[in-house]
Structures are given as structure tokens and as C-alpha cells.
Length: 152
Ligand SMILES: [Zn+2]
Image (cartoon, rainbow, N blue to C red):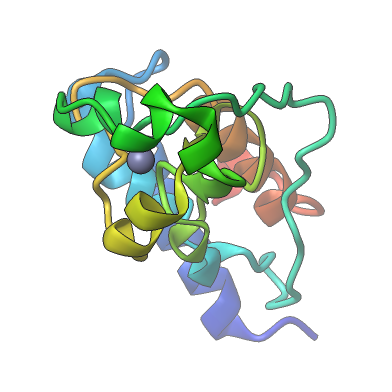
């Protein structure tokens, strides 16, 4: 028998999801990002699942992107001998539900990666990221699998 608490949590999640526009816009960002948090990666029975990242293009990590983020040229980009190995980071942190691949990848030199930490420096609040809509749809499908979404 399914725990009524999990059904209630699924209903609340679905009600919030239905408040979003069909095509996400900037006004949807805070709610949409809250709904992809790993705390919600459980189905209506309370069983955990992982979201897929198959088929998501990886970007070539050639330069430290801190230039783009702060507008000040990164000294390591000017001389590859200084640059060293670039680090993979994430625009929306993985710990908050951001994908580990594709459009969410951020390349940073070691210094800027350490300076950024797990913060939101690489996230652009003026743009809906390409991964967010598909991730929400997959999350909804997995969360509601086995029950009629119209009844939730
Ligand atoms: Zn840098």
C-alpha cells in the first residue's frame, strides 16, 4: 500500500508544476529550479530515481569562462602554459539538481573554480537554460508514473 504522505507530496509538486507556463520564461525560473531539486527525485510511492542525461551534448572545454561571467579577462586564457588543466563545473550546481553534462557545463581554470566554490556565479538569471524544460518533463513523468496525472 502506498504511503498517503508520498501521494500528498506528489500532488503538491504537481500543483506547483502546473503553475508554470508551457514554454518556460524568466518569471518561471525560481519555481522551475526549485522543482528540479534532488529532494523531489522520488516517485509517488517514495522510491528514489535518477534523471537521465543521455544524448545531451558535451561542450568543448577550451577556455576559462570566468571572462564571460565577470567580464574581466582571465589571465590563464592568455597563455596556455599558465592555464593548466581546466575544471568542469556547473552553471546551476549539481547539488541543487543541475545536470552533470551538456548545456549546464562550465569550464573554469583551477583558480576561478576554487574561487567560485559551489556558488551561483556561473548562472545567468536572464536566460532559461536549455536543460530545464526537458528535465522538468522527465521528472514529472517519472514522478507520476503509475498514476493518472489528471487525478493528481
Ligand atoms: Zn580563469
